[in-house]
Image (cartoon, rainbow, N blue to C red; front, side):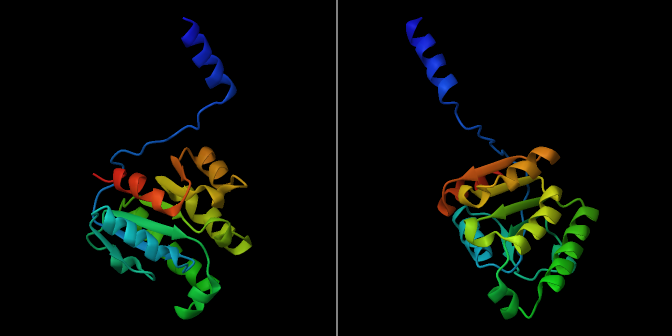
Length: 181
């Protein structure tokens, strides 16, 4: 009895972070693309490969790339260098992603959003893309340092979207793998 009271007291003082376990929310194959042309899109593909997921990586995917796709994974984070290398500006990138997500919605292809760039991939331009596309997600995975201001938390709570926060990029592997059937 004393042990139970002590455990209750410790948990009350130091509440455990709520963990949302995503179990088989998505089907394969998935299309991994960028919203902002950051390098983290490649990291997601490496993690998907390690997780033995069936995926296609297309950094500048268009609606035609959704053929035979069952999940769209959108890696959020703007890189001005990445946009330039892709021959895009932020307006063209937003239009491309908007058309892609719109087509995915028409085809009932669920959206998984990821943000792995931490604070370095946040800022006014990234936040604008996050605010537009995150509410359309079925699930969100974010590296905790990118959510210090709780923008992801606020949007996910408002739209009842499961949010999984991880400490570091390598920790994304488990929730990513577990999210798929």
